[in-house]
Image (cartoon, rainbow, N blue to C red):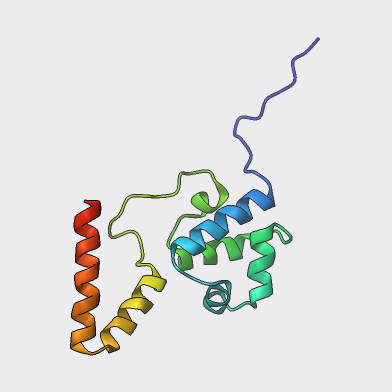
Length: 126
C-alpha cells in the first residue's frame, strides 16, 4: 500500500491563527484597529475581519500590512518567527509615544515628579 505523501512545505495555519498573529503584531506597534485601517486605506471593520479570520488577506493587503507593521509577510503568515529583539528594526510603541507627548505638556515640576517615580521603579526592578 503506498504511503500518503507529506507536503514538502508546511502550509500556513488557517485565517483565524493568521488573524491572531496580525492582532498581536498590531498591538505590539501600539496601534488601534482604526489607526491601522487608516494607514491601509480601508475601514476598521476590514481590519477586524482580518484579525478574526472572517476575511482572507489577499497578497496586496499582506504586503501593505507587512509595510505598515514593519514586519515581513512571512512573520504575519507564521513562516518566520516574529522578531523580538529590541533594536532599530522595531518601531516605537505609539501608545508609549503618546504618553511621552502628554508628559511633555505638563509643567516642569510635574514632569520631574513623574520622572522621579519612573526612576525609582526602574531601580527597583533592575
